[in-house]
Image 1 (cartoon, helix red, strand yellow):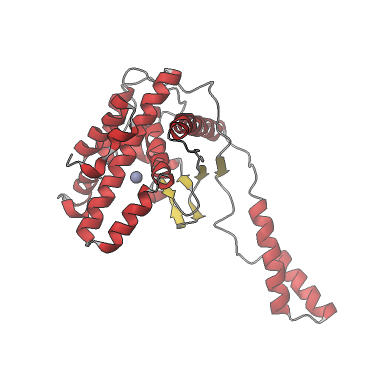
Image 2: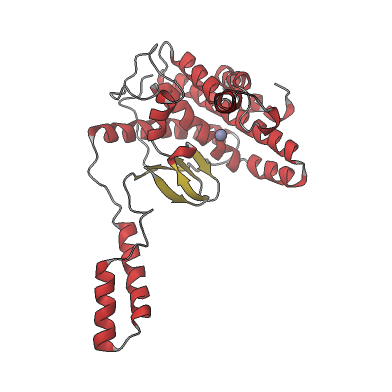
Length: 299
Ligand SMILES: [Zn+2]
């Protein structure tokens, strides 16, 4: 996959190594100020401490600004920023054609754990989209897991990424495009319709709807690949196979087999490997939003 030299999105929030998860700890400075306030001004130390604590917390949040990044981290944010820009340049014209405006999501890069509008996120969860704050959350360590735990590599492909211990670049881009696909579903009102239907249906019906939503996000990722190819000719030989390999290995049936040795279809939330590959290809071949109607299909 070719990705260097293109526009890099400004919608990336780099919070790797940030202090968000640490906020709330007792600061020595806060205690000293509280003590001084109590000693000299007769302020209740408990109250004084609370006041200084909220001030230092605010400082901690704003102190998260750029840390020294390693060349690898630098490259990771350039890569993620380029893929995000590619999704923006794909979906903006599509929304325009529909008579609307595409509001791009923010993408938060984090390490370890982070607070999101959808609760505390942990790297182990894998990348996800939070509709409440319209942000995609990615711990780039997941790209390593993709390779080391799921065996998704880019070996058949020449990857431009200098870090060779992670999944191939197109497999990574596919994961980002899938999460942006959830944002598109949110903007189009599809996610809320599904939520409403889920609130009324049984658990099994709810899971089936979740599968259809996931497969549609895969189809939307395919649309991104289609449009981006027309615009930038970014695909290289082996890229599609790389994404297919990733789709197969991230399929629920594969993950569940790995975990339990058996497959329980009703608890599927992402669809089978076969289904995921099918819908990614529908998007890739047609580039057409209308073809991604996974809700009216048995495939
Ligand atoms: Zn998804």
